[in-house]
Length: 489
Ligand code: BES
Ligand code: MN
Ligand code: ZN
Image (cartoon, rainbow, N blue to C red; front, side, top):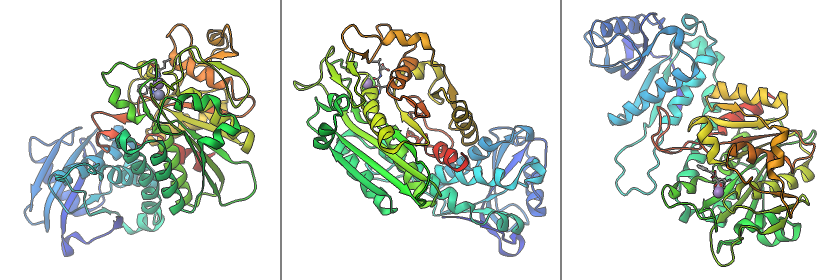
């Protein structure tokens, strides 16, 4: 639980105080904290520069057990992300010191020339997201999350932003849920397990959850999707989540790639790094968690989440390179490479969703291509869309949430690369260049007139190293981004 509080430090004292300091500007309106910062800057090793840290224990004359000062660098460089990183780091330090609770000093928005919400919101996010450890599989839990996190904020800010901690918690709980699903090993999230886990979480919040089993998917003609699960002993699943606080208007449809493990199929991947392919359901995890958050927030809009869930395995019953299948949309696809499986499950799910819901717009999230990671690195997602308004909204939300997207082109003449001699289209080009673009262009062939954007999250969906407010493993990338988009468009 995170709370905004105002305590009279002199009267009541504080146990663990965490204070942001810049090298060039006073940030606090609080006379006691101003004096503490002055004391901290009296030490030569602490100047408030980026990365500077100092702990004072029971500083003379102050009723505080310990104060952790964290340097933010120059005040002009303070932004949403540095504030997130500040509270994230504070919480990590607190966990490291085995603290039960911590209180963050909220810098004065006026002194930073910022809106109060622009200061407090990222601080709440960084703290909440950092206060999470994935310890499900550890017998000995070495690190414990903080039990209480408070924010020292004057009453005017408390009144103005009274509901903010709760709404930030709701969205960030979605991020943590997605992280847990992504980090879970593939032996514990075979398609039916993952589908059932999603259904159970969704129903708790009042979402309508429908499960389409392999039998139904076959009847409906999801042959591209079924070709991917053909090699697995486990059946394909599709979960559809519906949020409808309002009855009118077209829904927004979100689609997430849910490959619970991607061996590559008969085009088997090399062994090195294959374990990472348990994260190939990150798109589905993010979409499910977004719907759950939207439902808890009682967002006033119609929303549908579609999650095609399969396991891509090689076996005697697996699809072979060169196989041709008829997709739900009607076009035949030559499966030139069984490792380009994400696009095969997406085209059936997306074409079905477009036909069934006639959405206002559709966004799909998918760990689609290694090529996108080559292009943009591990922290930035690839954005593909021909809809300018949608592109603008997504890029802007990406900047705000720091779930960054970079738009890549969908050049008309590249479409020729996907021409098949025998079928209507092939799932990969003969050359590997521009692999992320090939993936997006392939999907586009099944979208007709629906307003649609594709976000390739192969890079940012998981992180080996972790960051200031994310431990190693799944990052939950996309949940805050999608929630922000939905709140704004
Ligand atoms: N799931 C992978 C993409 C991926 C790569 C995700 C790295 C996360 C990290 C996808 O199914 C895949 O295998 N893509 C192939 C496409 C190729 C066969 C055209 C790839 O990127 O190599
Ligand atoms: Mn693959
Ligand atoms: Zn894949």
